[in-house]
Amino acid sequence: MSLWEHANPKKFMSLSGFILPYISTLSMILLSWGLLWGFFFTPDEVRQGSTVKIIYLHVPTGLLAINGWFVMLVGSLIWLIRRHHVSALIAKATAPVGLIMTIIAILTGAIWGQPMWGTFWAWDPRLTSFLILFLFYLGYISLWKTIQNPEKAADLTSLLCIVGTVFAILSRYAVNFWNQGLHQGASLSLDKTENISNTFYIPLLISIAGFLTLFLTLVLIKTRTEIRLRRLSNLHLIESRS
Amino acid sequence: MISLLKRDLLVASRSGGALTLSISFFLIMIVLVPFGVGEDPLILGAIATGIIWVAALLSCLLTLDRIFQLDFEDGTLELLATAPVPIEAAALVKALSHWLTTGLPIIIVSPVLGLLLNLPEGGMRWLIISLTIGTPSLSIIGSFGAALTVGLKRGGLLLSLLVLPLYIPTLIFGAAVVNRELLGLSVATPLIFLTAVSALSVALLPLATGYALKINLK
Image (cartoon, rainbow over the protein chains, first blue to last red):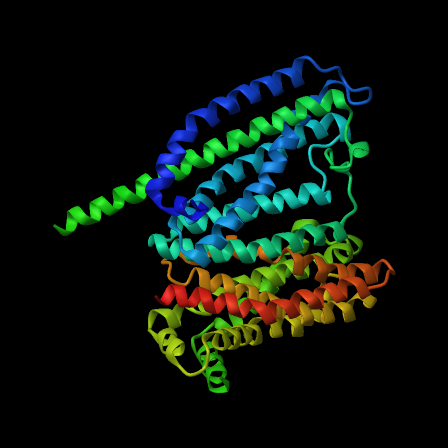
């Protein structure tokens, strides 16, 4: 059995319909476990006090905001190369979820930044890159919304996603050059010694897993909706012809 | 290709306003800035580079939808697509004619506007150089956005939403060239990056533009 079989919308629908209840329950469990543990059962950090707890929202959403774009990139590439409609629809479905994740990451960062840095916003490279990512999401979503013909829309948005990725990465390094940062280094790393302390680390990992499964749930639901919408419009077409 | 360029320039000069529209817009934007921020020469001098660069981006944007829209509506674009010249080359020529009608006039008047905004003397040379290197990429990137939205009825607003984020690297490096000179730092690094962004867009983006045009003509 190859992976490509699931490019068939019918196969995709049955598989995703089967997975969906499990993955959404898992996401609820992980999220409530990770967030409750993080918010109520971890000590305050020495310098930051209780504000450190926003990390359980900020880091997972920030992670998914970027990875959402990569999901879109992969979906777009598969669509352009192999012309599987499901893949284009997954890219379409991911965009709003990624946009929301970006907004949450920016907002939680601003709320944390006010007491800690003394400002809601600073033109720091990381913050600015997220703002730019937000703009890219907006452009991508609006392009999908404006083009009527679904095939053409999928083609053009995929093209935009690929070109946009190059420019987004370019902007990421350009803003690094443009302004030195205020933001701390990465919270997570494969190198154990660079990680934050274990007390925060494990609930953070659980929250990340929770948000990841939530992300998958939302993307699957949205993709299924898109497939059904596509079917519905095809039915209308057939009806109007007969 | 040269005849296409000639034709485009001719259309631009005769269609009334295309040639003067973006440059007038550029002038007005610059003139409005002192009314907003006050006439303090020090403040104006400090923000002059940024204002001129941002104004250049926006006035470039103003005429982008003309690159392909009219040709798409009257069918010229379809003829171009079936012509022996590849459509990517046609897209490049169209971007070139856009640059000749917007980018070039902007570069020519920018020293005067630099004077108006009290740009320090050393910055003037680098402002012209950075605009000369940077504006071609603005036209090229813009033509890609224009190709994406060519089939749409009201693509103008969407076009700016798509294109402006893509302008960020050019803007950052372009303005950094001048600002670094004013701070007495070496301009080499941003200049190299600006040239790289420009050269890569000129080399690669016409392929994407051509592809987008093909999709829209399907």
